[in-house]
Length: 371
Image (cartoon, rainbow, N blue to C red; front, top):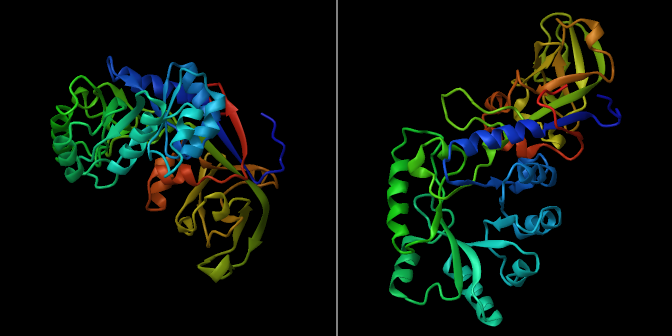
């Protein structure tokens, strides 16, 4: 594949791998539908091409966080694609959900009241999802608000509740007792809306088994290749492949400090390659003296502090033919997966993907293999 060479790095997104991951997740759900979380620009990989690829594979439920994300995505999907805004409506912007044909998740009594008022103004019921908190203490109706619901027979007047939903806090840890605690509470709350469909499983929740599947699952990170279960082999394909471009290579004598603060010094004569990726590109400063890259199949260490626009590699053992200016080094690959990269930074794959910057030259591929 040819590249323009102007950008400091190349981010390749394998849409066929994305579709394969979607089909694998869907296959585990039986009759339950499989949606897709495409919030945060599809975890940094591009909401529009990702959503269009998933739509082509049959996905019809797309979850974003903010109304603005839904508005940006709406023109790029057919009208039968439901775009669901998990944060609900910003105060005063409820009417825009009708204008842009998207659906709110109602998380609080205030959001419910505003949606009921809009329904009254339009003299018809309006669709929404209703979220209940089963243990995260983050979003959704609290226990107190649920009691208010139980005491008010008109609590949901004017609202067509399409799904009752909640969110699992520890699904990646399959033996965590909180999973079953949340499931039990969710089933109890289902009794308040008999006959209404339900959604509980996120990416990891799909792997907890059929008890957690209900009617609609909403995977996110697993679609993009992040391992869904702690301690188990990842069954999903890598979707993102990041390569940084070498700017220059130099020989340094023993005792030479590298980068800001000279946090790494060469013990012997060494060869250092400077690569055009830094924390402005989402390559976190916490990778300093910890992260790795791969050149010609060989692992090399990041040495010195990550700068805004560059990182430096100890390439002493790499043949000069692989170190010419403009050549690419692997930062995220099948060898150095997004989860392995995250572990070096004491974070999770979600943060690595969503931090990927806007300066990369992006290529979307429909082939299974990454060139």
